[in-house]
Length: 311
Ligand code: CP
Image (cartoon, rainbow, N blue to C red; front, side, top):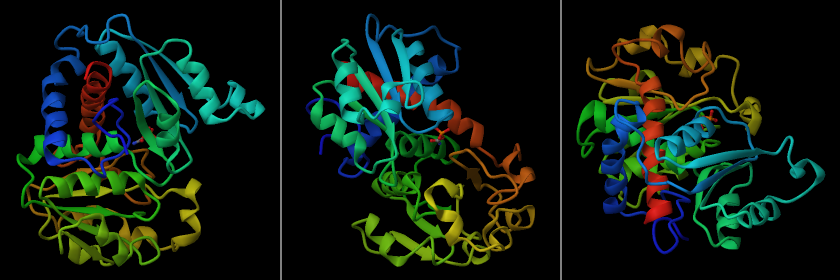
């Protein structure tokens, strides 16, 4: 699997080394002033065109890739399933081959098929970036999540992070867990038995680096951060959750009081407010890093695009 070698695809966190991840984290940090507009756009992508091929809906990932290209001095266009010839039955790979033939430098792909981005990468000569493929991975979300946690907490070795909710259906959980494990963080996966199982401990090769818990109340007292996951109704998680989900697994104000004072809260978005997270928690200026994730999403996608386009 190509991820950061040869053609500079970025398809998954699986198989990356710690050195490669830290390279991207350091590049992310250097891009923050540009991502925030405090420094002028860079010229890394000068004269280059990036294609965003989004066959699943998106706000954060699509717009932040577009913003990242602008901040790197390049040009970008986005293709969605609706309004393209995908609606006439053209396949993802045929769509990608035709767009590559227009001379684009990098392709960003989001699709509902697990392994879909790798399938495109295998057919193309240009670098491909996975912007989320089915239940498989969402590697740039993993990168921006650990960038946000490093900014809030410092080095992540020995830290403990709870990832709570619909882990089974979450490509974010897979990428972020793998990224945290690469950096030496202990991960606690929390949720109902239908959505979190002990088999998920195999996401790390290090014994006991990943714990599984079905009891959120007892899982919060010793963590440095909580990443809440969205209940993914479009991936049929709705049938696997009970009507008392908020009571058992929602991050409420009462549960926040169980956290250490320094602990921060993340959520990849979009949030189901009042289900997995309460308004007062999501908007807590002291603990919530949810909008900071979005800002660092631009900086981290700049880093991945620079790596892809320039090497
Ligand atoms: N976090 C995330 O992937 O959000 P979008 O679906 O809006 O891109």
